[in-house]
Length: 261
Ligand SMILES: C[S@@+](CC[C@H](N)C(=O)[O-])C[C@H]1O[C@@H](n2cnc3c(N)ncnc32)[C@H](O)[C@@H]1O
Image (cartoon, rainbow, N blue to C red; front, side, top):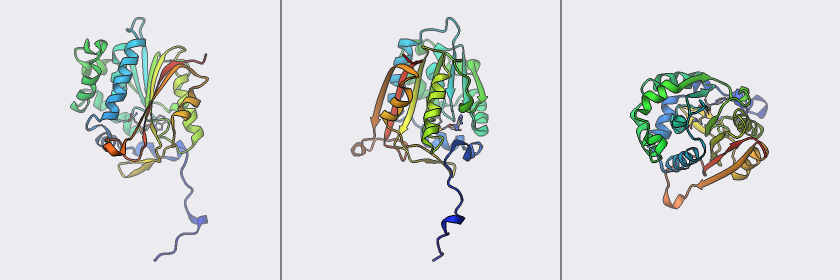
């Protein structure tokens, strides 16, 4: 048996966002693992987000600009903003994800059809004749590091499974969540989804980090920078073998408006 290396020669443990090779994030593998079929937890999130945006976002008059932060290879957050925006920025720091987004948006694949069908339960979505051409014409793909997002710029925003899934450093989770909300103009609505209790994940053979978070962590992050905050938690029920991404104890959805009260 080989001797275990002594601690002094072990490589330093990666913790922070900048320690990871985000350009090696494999969007095709990520999509296959998470969105090849519409799973129950995503269906619940879509239902809540469409109801919330339908109730508070109104129609794009005056023109509204939306942003999805850390889009990866997930189009459903951007689709959830489609009726309420004249322009939607899909942003990510990863070159591979940015390239995937540019390509996918030309004519998005049938994978997203069940997600869109779920959204069309609300009239503003149902009124859209062709979501593919509409998303293509409104979308702007940008390589943006969320820690450098400008403040008070967008009118509506989404950030799904990002703040807790880009670093093992709790302070960075906190900063990422706040940076997202503060990128919105005051009183503008957002939806942010988080994996609860995640210890990290693998994409395309590469390990990626996470911070284990719960509802109290999200509430604490948003306390003084958002209002009308509504947090939903869906724990995994092992008895039901509810299909969920591996390695998580549940999902958390935070809805609310930017700006403290
Ligand atoms: C777990 S994935 C979530 C992807 C997608 N939003 C979803 O709902 O499945 C995390 C995403 O955050 C991106 N990311 C990592 N660090 C980032 C940063 N500093 N700024 C913006 N995006 C970042 C990654 O490239 C990846 O696409």
